[in-house]
Amino acid sequence: MFLGLYWGEGTKSGDYFEFVNADPGAIMACMVFLKSAGIPIERVSGEVYYYPDLDKRATVAYWATITGLDEARIYALLKPAGTSIRRRRLPYGTFHVRVFDKPLVRLLLANIDSIRTRLKDGQKGAI
Image (cartoon, rainbow, N blue to C red; front, side, top):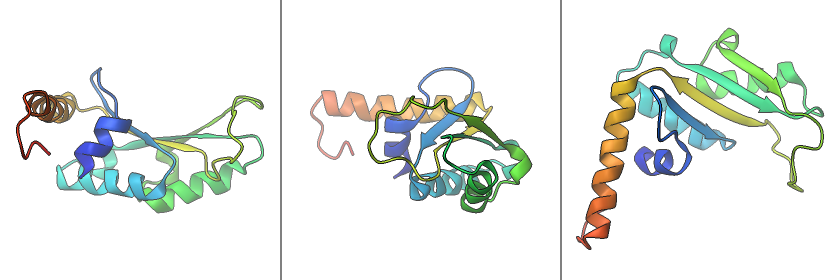
């Protein structure tokens, strides 16, 4: 399941794994995936982009609870006022999960390429 989420919301280049979403369920799925892949939580960091009308401490505490990360491993970046064109604001900003792990990224991208190839070739059961 997480491969599909990563295909849509993960980095596709570089030497690091990054998954970005505002949905706490998607972020929890990411953390479960990383744990199942043997990535120690100490290697995981987070970054939250939040809006001026949000409380920074409360936002960081929220994502720390969702991810299990220590608050000190979550960097908070303020989005300037007027940068969002959405009518419905994201109540806890956008969260980025990051791990510097080139082999993990290569494995995920290889699996995505395999599915893409099977879909292109019209193979049944590609997904």
